[in-house]
Image 1 (spheres, rainbow, N blue to C red):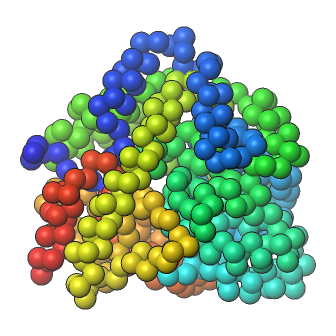
Image 2 (spheres, rainbow, N blue to C red):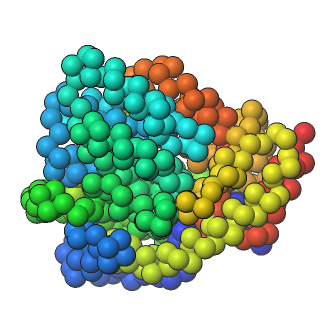
Length: 423
């Protein structure tokens, strides 16, 4: 085992040797970067997998959401209900339409609370707001309370948007996440279920929405070659230069490569202030579609591995009083994909710091704020302090454990031993 390579929850966790070699091959084929048959092949694969009539690819999940809001004709001051404990990139597309996100508190599974949704719908109606949609997240691959939310949406004439950035392969009562809503989107970000560094897809069975998604996709430009090259270099540099010596020089290499724009960041600075960068929305590039297809072929292997690692955590941590296992009780109706394995503890800051000293990197950015990353300007997102107390409490106390393909049982045991031996 390389003593300088960390056990990490993020840092491009999905990429294997074949992904790195494929990215390297694509670097030397710039004629295939922007246009090619892989884009349509990826869309067709998603239509087939989800049994959805239509799928349209874009260069990110947030670009896919922008396309969806355009297709739904969301206008200024329209209300879109969203859960707290979410990422700013799910809120900025709503703000870009000058629409109004209303934040809903979460239940103990980190998903939108139907009871709070009903209360805030009543409040918004009493204020004369125009209610258009509700968006559910399936946080970390744990399906939301779908039946209750669908019932509320139908009774209030709300369109149901599924944010499936965390939940490719998860099921609710046998139905794949991404097929229960009116329209849905997926992300292939660097730490998602499958990864092409950036990438996303919007799907629907509604022909009217599909027509508008197609029109939006056609008028959207391709990303620049420089931006595409940044993404192709990410798995190469991360796996060959940054991770192998992360505890010595790797973290400085990462900072340098991002500083001189050889690599991109997962979340851009302006996104933390409610501004969508110029890189979005754009069409999906053929090069990244090729990477996404390679990862998609490994979806079942990835998710089965996540299940094994999560079961290991559950078995070994459930007797420890200082941790609350959020996903311990799942029931037969949910098939979880465990993008991360969240636990609650009152000592999360201390644990993250001590883990870093053991070369275990547990700070994935999904903590310390109801809108992540934690340095996001919440007021720019339209979030009102204490409007979602459960989300704020969980964000303060959450700690996410890695489940990705590079976490072996030995790695998981090392994490468990570390947690058990905390003073």
